[in-house]
Image (tube, rainbow, N blue to C red):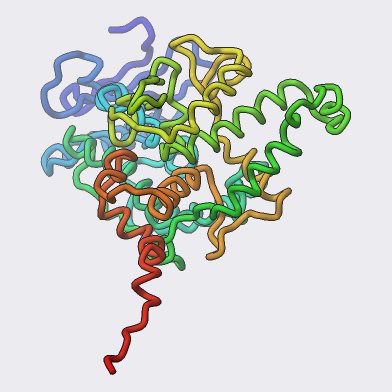
Length: 425
């Protein structure tokens, strides 16, 4: 008998041990209950619970109820103990999550840290049922509009998630609950539906890209106001911007080159932020200097080569000239301390707000992803490249380009669409 037990009593043929803890201030009864079934270790074989009473009869009755409940669950193939979602998530990360692609794991982590754990973290996984899921979606859709997120200074304030985002977050929850079922930690998979959203997939079919006029206007703002002008004494720049310091200017240069490199390469924002100097490859083609990126494998579509427009050479040169970190293992877009630069969304929002150019002609807000959309749009309108080759270069499918850039393809056919059939005389 453990030295930590006193006043111990065995019930139900030894399946229950009731006792008081040695040294406890109050003689509260505790129970050590043998679980039905076989287990490899003693710690797994027993369930310990406080009966939360000093009355022996009440404690005995409560312990017997727990034992009966365990035996019923065992007989009916129901998990004996319930887990809270936060604990299940940690178990899943330690066994399955470590084998996940880093990019995918980052998506899952964000969904759990921002939404799933704050809402479901302390909930028993057996209690995650359709009614509770519906309440979660109400909370989630309001999070950045009227909920906790709206009280922050995040760039997401006011945003209602798209259907694709909601589906992604549902999948993050489903895959971990499915794993719980496979591990016999949950009896059956709960139904997890997605809410109806006011916006439709058709609304999202046109991707927000800058027009050539908007891009030129943005460039002029960068060159004439946002950064020191060409040949301008740096003291004049500080005089024009008394509230700025060198850290602000460093971040501004990173944003400007992020936008320019993105618009001339078509990489996704996440891919741009993961680029290191070792991924940049200069080469000659047709006697001309060119540059390409060897996109790392921990990205959405895995490792691939991306051929940039020649203008990227001067943007990369400017980036290297003003960056504090330019060794092979350093990120192209970095912080002053040498870490990976954060999402440029907040800085971009401020620039576009100042310029009064926050949305495209369809009312869609410009976002960091707009650099990729602009590249694809410009290549379709002004380039001489097939959709197959373009899709391969940016790591997408021809179907995606046909779906989301159909309005651009339509503009390409202006001559055909505006021509008049001549009547024969």
